[in-house]
Length: 153
Length: 355
Image 1 (cartoon, rainbow over the protein chains, first blue to last red):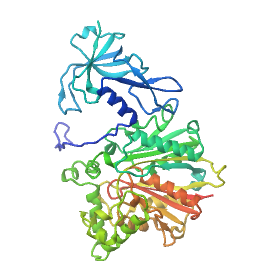
Image 2: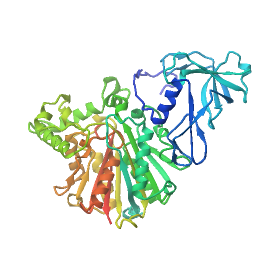
Image 3: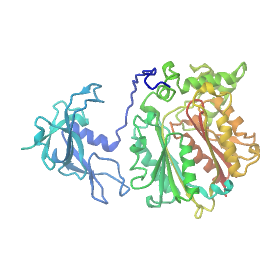
Image 4: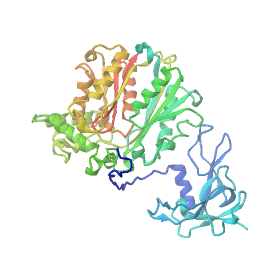
């Protein structure tokens, strides 16, 4: 076969839609987010406070139902600035780049949360920085009710 | 290798399934957790007794890739060996049987889950078809089932009524399922969905999860074992046009492998009960022909899939029913069947024997 020749390709556009059941624990969490409130769920055996919450501790193999409050501020554990635009699954639009993405350990949780970072001044992003959530005014009970996290001075 | 001995030591230790619902409001993880906890209880085992996990799910139906990530914690796969099969749950059970027979693990948990309510199921199946020749034409699993039914019907003018009778009978037998109870006339008057298949002829699809615990040994406390005496599976050509759709040749080959393993020479008299995974009446004729079961074999005593089923779980649920049959003294031996892909491209069977 001639390696220099472009072979015919067939273009297919997919338009598929699924509805995900959130489950009891994620429903409670998202309803809280809509009200500007964050909660984690604590394992009664290992004591780990999971955020996002989940129905089951995979390590101890026990159900989780001990809810504990979590602050909307915490510590930046890792950060990156992404320069490749991505498709935003919620809007179907391309998300402008560059954007910051961090792993944030909120006060009161033992796991880290993935979220956007304010990158107005990327030089302020350092591991160990204190960060706080910037909330959307028109909340709808979804993860992007928090616009991003900003570094506290 | 003496294949007859290869799976003989593997038993069904316990299992559980959710009632099929449309929709089941629970998340996939919640449904899986429910059946896993009940299966462990049924097997009188604890989480720590499980050596490995095999799950069955289909990414396209679940709306995420590697869809086993949704259930990793609730199936107890964190820090344990997990294998995921993107096919029917009986194929996952066969994988587990082979893991145990190979001596890799003593006790393996098998979990299958699927939610037809999440999206338009038949539309999704179009995306499981070849992208060059079939997807652009909108061919899906239902279209192919219609073509297959039409080929089988041929010029037999009475066959449609017989299919309607069979569907109505199975749905009446399937007490408590999600399928509406149709009379024969109601089936014949129900809308055509893929000619000659009518809505009333279809097994209803919903949401479900199923878990089965397989292990070496077993039966010490219950006094009897349900042994997996033979397994077989087969994958035929993907393109429906490459196959003779008037038969399930893949199932015939899968059965020959399982029967050879189980030492069965005459399938016509071998099974007290058969639990086929048939979504349409014409598939039952394909199953009987390919599996070679005789008139003394009771097919789908609980109505089979016509009580309702869910993507990926059917065959694993059939394995539970076959186990129930041999443990409940319905007979010495039962046959469980699962299938996946367009017009039965993938086929799996397991021979279950009381010991």
